[in-house]
Length: 283
Image 1 (cartoon, rainbow, N blue to C red):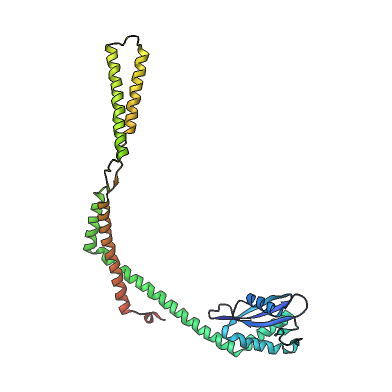
Image 2 (cartoon, helix red, strand yellow; image 1 turned 120 degrees about the vertical axis):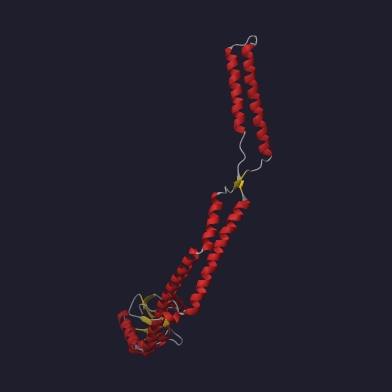
């Protein structure tokens, strides 16, 4: 059943690890799960899933019946009523051969495979038609978009948008909070103190302070410079904030262009669908 696309069933073989004992059965589910259920139900020991064959779902019972008929002479007698069924005394190769012959002889299997083949042909044709339909639709929409891009309305809107973007910073001066004002006052205080230290040094040059030497003046100058530097450090500029009005205007202009584009695409799609259907693209 390679390449099968329809619903599938299974013919499976359970083989005992010792001796030539097999079970041939069918299921519509995972054979490994069916094996666990079967072994538990009939208390079979040392039976493993040996082979599984994918077949059309509706053909599995017919194939199983034909395979059992071919293995009838190897069927084990039930030792007790209600015991395990479909148990045969043979090796797996014999069971495989019976299943393969039954699969080839089953008329139900032939009919189901033919149905699946025709269904696959139909699906393939539909897929090809859909691909051609989508390709032509995309080309039609691209052509409409080229006309839309070349329209005077779009050119004028894009020009206005570009001019607005180039001429707008989209940022504005922020506002100081309490901490900002505190730092501003503190910075000016440091600068004032540093300036006073420099003025004191200049005065000391012309009106020397008793018992003060050149080293003392250098210390005062360094102290004043440090205060000014500290004040400048604390004098942080107000960080800019986004200009929400400018950003909103830009978004509105972009949205207007995008809405027109999507409307053009929707209109092109509707026009195409009015004139073409999938049937127009079948080979």
